[in-house]
Amino acid sequence: MIEVKEPKKEIPVIGTLKAMFIVFKHLFQKPITTQYPEQKRIIEDRFKFRIFLSLDDCVGCTLCEQVCPNKSIAMTSLNRANPRNKRKIYPDVNFGTCTICRNCEEICPTDAIYLTHVFETSRTRNSFTYSPEELSLPEDEVIK
Ligand code: SF4
Ligand code: SF4
Image (cartoon, rainbow, N blue to C red; front, side):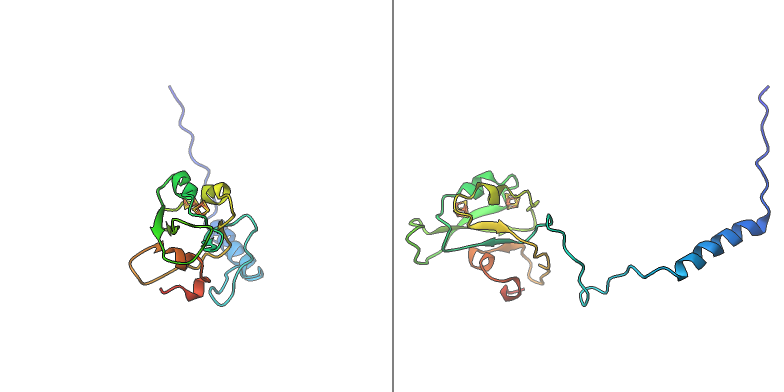
């Protein structure tokens, strides 16, 4: 026959005192809440998000589009003078499906497309796609 052991009985007030001790300990700790967006935390170097595009450096080779695993990049016609981009096609990027793999940045032969530390891309318009012109603008100049 298996002997069932009775659980150890603890004096009721001990549990309450332990909980109070934990609360009391936290009274003397520095707050770790960051009052975002007024306060900003330091962003680690390895963190990357918002993609930028240099319209002058893009040669329209479509490599970034081909290498994107999520089809987040689509080549778009843009009528602007650029002797290096004879077909006048440039990538747009859908940030809704981009997984920040950096394939596009690594494959680009002219370093025209690259990821940055910018991450505040919230918007009210119903599209996560940035046109080539928007990709070339600072984030605060992109129409939300
Ligand atoms: S970072 Fe990766 S997923 Fe995002 S656009 Fe570039 S290739 Fe596509
Ligand atoms: S951004 Fe780079 S990889 Fe993409 S089309 Fe332009 S030159 Fe080619």
